Length: 298
Image (cartoon, rainbow, N blue to C red):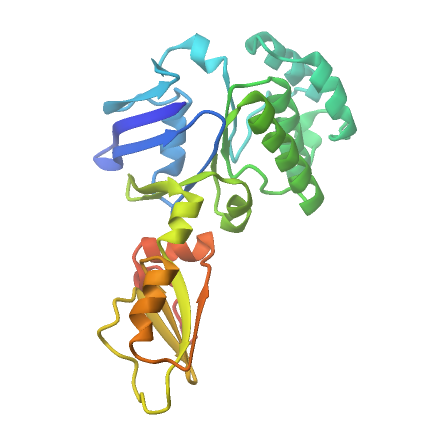
């Protein structure tokens, strides 16, 4: 389990984290989302034990991660900009990982050659961005970590490789109870793999729920009123309303049955509840129209 409790971090007077709190359960995939500058990468660096908070704590299986080699040896990480030694080959980095991770599996490393068809003797610096990301996954998965922390993990990979990697990771979650924390702007992809989602903004984790709970507590309704209703009723508690001809779309913070019952009193000709995507939930939980895409005439 990963626990972040009341974590605060300030850089030169700027509060990057403001009593941030999150919990990623064992054997789950936790998606961390938020706008640029929300504090996602900062909180990840604390979870990895790179930064020490001004206050609060980060616990991995109940132990503080800061200056704790035993805990760090159970965590593998793939940052957006993966680090490797400047003149290292993939085989060189494999030997480095073997020296650091006590559970590194050469058997798994050899099997993964069928997936990652990379030249082990070639300097990693000469690889493309996508090939470097494949190398990072090859080594991280072979390390057999209990915790895997990913920051924009599949950026630069082709669709087939993305699916292959997620398949391997999900198998580890199911079979080895690996805990995966992933930060990404690809909300559509997170929607397919995450059990829980934390939404960050301005250094805080504003919402932390299972994906199903998020989707159950917000609904999109498409409604057509009778022609006698000339204007959209203003007393409907909607986060957002848009209209296209006679079809009105309402985003409401409630479940579908309650929202349908509320709108039914206006005797609509048609009412249809549509599930929201994680991207839509993200936009409206962060402030609705203030985060929505704006029409700008250039």
